[in-house]
Amino acid sequence: MEDIGGATGPGDDQDPQSARGADPPLTATSCRDARPPLRAETAATDRNAAELRRQFHHWLALDTAADIVDDLGLVVYEAVANAVEHAYADHTDGPGPVRLEAHRTDGHVLIIVADEGTWRAPTDDRFRGRGLQLMRHLAQEVTVDSNHDGTVVRLRADLGTTTPLQPDIE
Image 1 (cartoon, rainbow, N blue to C red):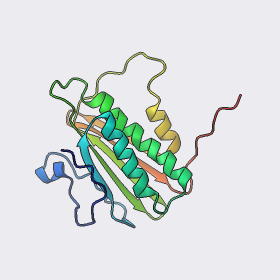
Image 2: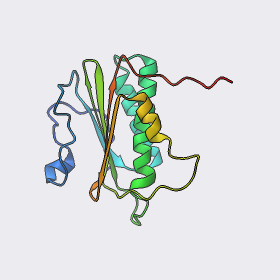
Image 3: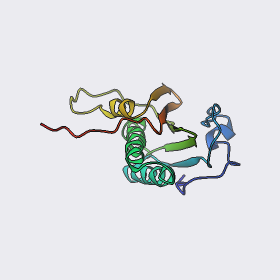
Image 4: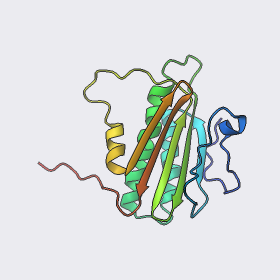
């Protein structure tokens, strides 16, 4: 399960789950990669969420402005952190898998984060729940599909038009 070794080549087109026929492929069929996509799968833990963010950051930073890389690294971390916190909350045998896939194309990046868990009901904590709001601010498209087989978060960000976070100045 601990397969967070980084980007894989274009010949590695199938996700391990889709190879078993359990889930649809997580690949982006509507765009052609300008470079090999990033694909990683690991246990949904805090430490591994930070590692996936680091890998994404390194992968995208090869030819993308630093402020955009930082913003999208935060988007990836929020999506993975949601899987860590919510997807396997009721599991007694430890965390399940979380998958990250990213496709860099001319002008945008498609990011997919998927888990196989069942999300717990949201709490009434007013200081929580800003992850999706942050993702929607920094990416141009965000979709979340959840069912009994897990949750898939798909994000698309135009690499020249992300909206950087501005500090609150009072």
